[in-house]
Image (cartoon, rainbow, N blue to C red):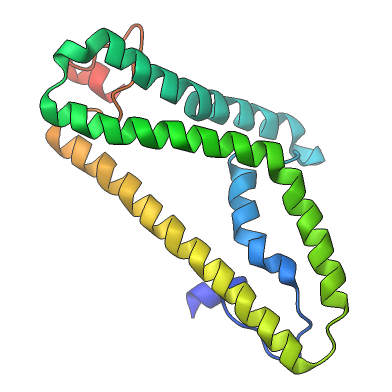
Length: 188
């Protein structure tokens, strides 16, 4: 019941409630906003721009390049297990960066699609039509939540496993840090 209050668009609404198809992308667009690739809100313009700059410079641009640099500079220091794990992380980092850039380029189309969905919702008139839209909105958000749960479980388990065995989660290259030198540099 708590989830129903926090995430109401994950559940079907009553047939009497007018349909809002745009709610099918509600949680996706909130995540896009948190990624820093939406139009910034006017009352938090500076904070959002700084958040977007820091997040995207570190994760979208620096992360894939630093993994590639680590391969070039430290390839002889990788154990076979670290190397195989880092290949998985490198693929994930490059594909995530590609995905972020594509979403950033096309985010206006989400807004345009939602405007078209609003026009289509205005044509609905019967409770049966409302029910179909409510069901599909709930299904869309459910699929998104399953994807996010699996992805976050993967990221969390990778982090916990790396901490448990004492190696960094990502084999990034940091010019002035060597995680093998001391515990302080490892945790930094």
